[in-house]
Amino acid sequence: MEQGKNGVQSELYQSFIKKRKTFRRTFILSCVLYSILLLGFFIFIICAFSHPAFRLTASTRERLWAYFLAGPCIVLAPALIRAHSAARSEYKKLLLNPTLEEVFGSGLTTVLPNGRMERTTLQAAHILGVGEKYTANDLTVGTYRGHTFQICDFCKSHFKGQVFALECNRIFPQRLCILQQGFHRANLPKGSTKCIKTGDAKFDEIFSCYTIQSEYNQVLLTEKMKRTLQMMAELTDEKCMITVSGDMLYLVLQEQRDSFEPPLFRSFHLEKETQRTRAQLQNIAVLLDCMTTDAFQNK
Image 1 (cartoon, rainbow, N blue to C red):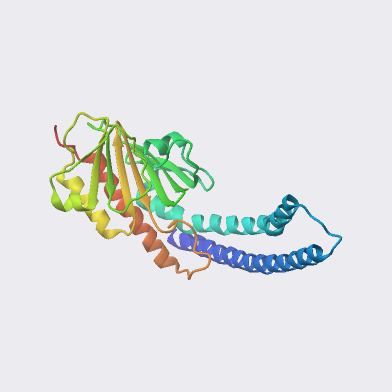
Image 2 (image 1 turned 120 degrees about the vertical axis):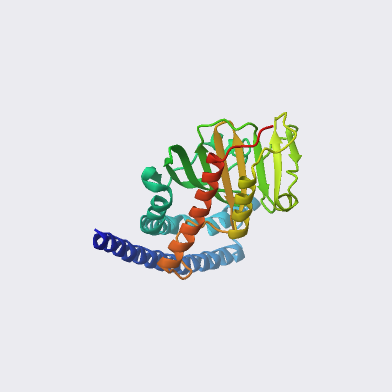
């Protein structure tokens, strides 16, 4: 069985490397063709504009320059997009999906490369405002230790990361949002948010805690929860935001690049990429375990 598994992984690895090379060749060829088309169009424009019989209005010139810049992209983009999608799909099969199953168990029911969370879920996580534009992909749905969860990559203006939504089958005593220092682009409701210190000086240096529409005057975090959050902040480069509300827990990770996307241009080492992805997901699993099993302090 192990030999068969290794054989499948080897086939997936070779397939990804092949698709990766195809994308890189397509990208280089597209750049070359784009440069040639731009140069040809530029020469045509210069010659046309310099000819005395070639008189254009200002609006016509603007349209020509738009065609000059966008035309080659429209011609070459489909082939580049197809090559990127093929390489991305093989990478997910090779590395991400097996690592998700390894960390979160066999409860994964759906993996949708082009899927995304509902807007209402992202708004509840306080990472998206009403009417704000965003993109998302790699929606994964399943159960973790009896709790239904969703994961997806998320991107909006000046923000890139992942969003986790977990049904905890319990009622949290307060609506709480915890922001790590350096986390940007949170969308907290104005007028109903109150920043409260936990009394733990070390924790308060790393995280800011906000209660939302709550009568509580203290943050109801246990020592175990605070230590787990501090450990996560120390072990990972990503900045995080945790929101608990009713029976839902939301975790948003902010990072410099999409860690679950294939390395199409930088060097690729399967073992290192697997270890890095596994470590990131294991840190998240530890946090989810703590937040769903540890009891909140009483008021």
